[in-house]
Image (cartoon, rainbow, N blue to C red; front, side, top):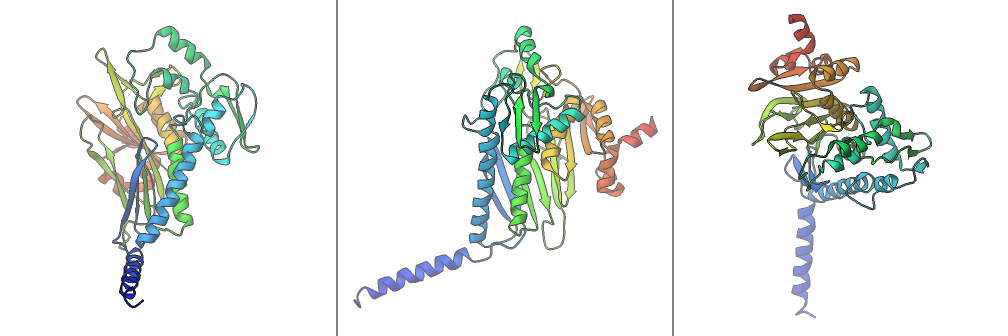
Length: 360
C-alpha cells in the first residue's frame, strides 16, 4: 500500500491544480467565438469571469442559438419553419412562442413598409439561388419570375399572436433570414442578462447588441460601420454604444455577377428582382435587434429617399451610406442625431436629413 500512496497523492494534486485553474479569474474582457448559421458569433464579456463560468456561459449561448436554428432555419429539413412551409394551405398551425414573435415582427414591418419587407419571398430567394453555398448560373426567365412573384405578398401569411398560430393562405415559402439573426442576437443578450452579466457585446454575423460598458472606466462599446466597397473591410464610422442593438443591411458583400451586371442578394419583394439603386447600406439603432434587422432590410429595399422618409415617419435612428460619383455620402435621420447627440453626430461626419433639407 505504501508503494501506491505517492501515485494517489500525485493524482490528487493534479486534480486540485486543474480545478484551481478553472476557477482562476480570466483576463478581462473575455471573448467567446465560433460559427453558427453559416456565419460567426463573437461574444465579448467585460464582467469578471473564471474559465469555468465562461465555459458554462458559452454552453448556454450555444443552446440558445441551436434553439433558434431548430425553429427558424430554412437549411434544416427538421426545423419548425420548414414544417410550417410544408403544412396544408389555409390551415392554422400551432407554433412556438419564438417563431410566432418573429413572424409578428416581420408582418408589422411588412405593413409599415408597404411590402418592402416580406417574409414570403423564400420562393424568389430560392429562384435566384442565394445562400451560403449556391450561386445562380443564369438570371431567371421573365415567365418563371412572374409565376413566383404572383404568389408573394404579406397578405399570403396570417399570424395570430395571441393563439400562438399562423397559416399560409397561398403556397409561399416563408424565409426569416432578414429577421431571425436579429432575434437570435436578442436571445443571446437576454440569456446573458438572465445569468447576471451586466457588460457584454453580442455580435452574430454583424448583428450587434450591447449592454453596459466595455471596461471598468465606463467606456462605451464601439462598433465600426463598413465603407461600401469591395475587398478588405474598412470602418467608415465608429459608433459608441450602450444598452442598444444595431443591425446593418448592405448590398456590397453578398452578390453575384452575370454578363457584366452585378446582382445584390437583397431582393425587392415588389418586383422579385435584386435591388439596383445608389443606397449601399443601412444601419438601424433600436432596442431590439430583431426589429432593427427587419427595418434595415426594408429601408435598404426602398432606397435612400423613400427609406429615409419612412425612417423619419417612424422615428427610427438610421444611418445610410449612399453612393455618390466615385465615393459615397453618409446620411442620418433626426432620431439618429437625437440618440447620439449633436456633438457625436458631428464628429461622425454625417449629414442629418433635416440639415440637408435646410441647405436645399
